[in-house]
Length: 478
Image (cartoon, rainbow, N blue to C red; front, top):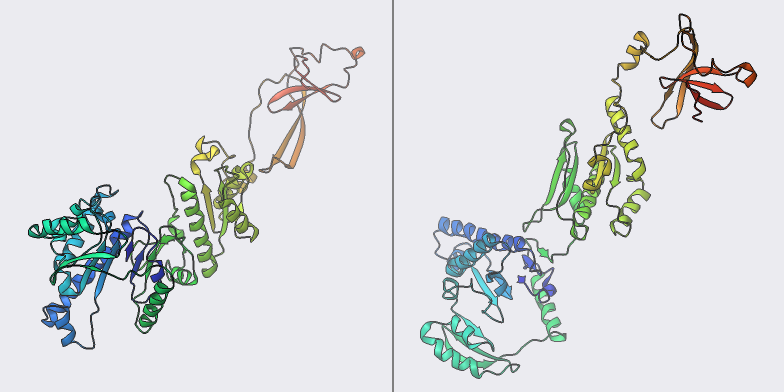
């Protein structure tokens, strides 16, 4: 049942004998999947009838009382949508029109029928004679005479136009033209309200005793809920690897799509596209949530970090991230700490002590440090570097020192937060006699410089006097 107006068929949701209900006109792909499924059913029945030697469904059912084939009815309200020229995907539309034409031509033998309704054929140029000529029963409500003439054979067009031109709107009039002749009659119209509700209730009760093949309901605005059924399905995929599920495959079975991230291949996922109404962002967060479900089900011990580079303080998805972080499911890393977090992850990988990790970057194109290729610190040392250092020591050269002069040298080791964790100070005197005087040698004791001394700092010779620092030329720098 395809309702391109989007308001008429919701009351049939949940009925066991409704295989698919579509109440949205925006997604041509799901429309195509519904129509393609009917074609596959016709092909299956064609094989069954051929194997049984039956010419049609009625004959097959008489021969196989325990394998009764039910009638399949394809209903499309506002069907002109299927046959309009403004289709977004011309290839899909052509395939759909061809399938509907095939149903019109051959469907009756296999128990497949069409029920099409529209207010006007003016916007349905793709609805051609190969379909209209196969429709033997026409029920024509008040409409444009030219539209009515398209439905009937050439010899009946003039008469049909005359009758339709005299019909009154709002009177329940209908003109029948078909195998039983032609007649104008008044029909009972079931309006919305108690009468329609009663009929729908009776239909539901009648269908309750029937088996169901499942139902696909598509409104175009459905979220993809990770239900227990979906979670159980994900648990059967990927063996011991973590599994993501961004949504459902577009088919009538609505099978969850799964992506297994294999540890030995270091696999990653990239989502890209126009982020209209935060579509890509919401899909990314949904995918991350599915990874969290898989992580919990398989007890894999993953940690989740989120870099939100979109900088949208009013975005609705922020509430979701806050809730996930509140429940200790992830850590949303502040912008100023992203570089440090990347450095920590790199160091952990280099030292073979990394925990299973999922790093989610929202809006990677706005990740400034990544975009500008900024360094995040020195490359982590090789895991054998400490042993090599202890045996070989450090070797470096300092130039620009004076002969016969005493210096203090301090070496400090810092962690990645620039905190000194160890330091060592040594004193040494260069060999030879001083040949060139500096500012300190030119100062006499009477001027109060007797307590000044030279130090080596960052490969530069400086003069310290009390709490002040001078260059070798005597210029104060602090």
